[in-house]
Length: 248
Picture (cartoon, rainbow, N blue to C red):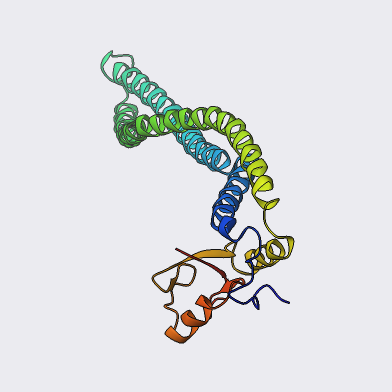
């Protein structure tokens, strides 16, 4: 006789009253296994490390750009100083009386004007680099703070992950032992049905029947079907999702 065909005068299979407790333990074990895999794979830590690496990359690129702009600015400032020295030297020749030829004096004046124009253009480039440097320096502080926070988060997660891993392993061992004790008290045929349903029904093989409503699929059972369930001592199954029902 199957588990579902027992009449009202027959004895229900052993452990029916334990199925909800077993189901709760099994769901807890499932969650612990999932969390254990996450911790072993260090998914949270890995994500935090990736965020840190991305922030450090942005910081490194920013510092490279700042160094390059600073070098360019210093080079341009040196060019300005060089041009100014040339201008001063040419102006000295223009006014110290060492040159008397009018054409040569005119040539010197033209050279001075040319040097001044070049110096003006270089000074404009210096100003551009200074503005760019200020922009980069303004970005530097927030990115450095982001890197510091990301590094702190990685260290925090690594420490917490190590602690949680130990705790999850301990709890999983306890819940697995509890599961074995409960399963040993359930009729083997009933346990096989329950475990088969768990594989089919996303880990939930047994649910409560409350006020005629299956707590697995949340469907209200028909009055005729409910009356049939009352007349059997066998395993009660939901007429919709076919999970094992435990009346409450």
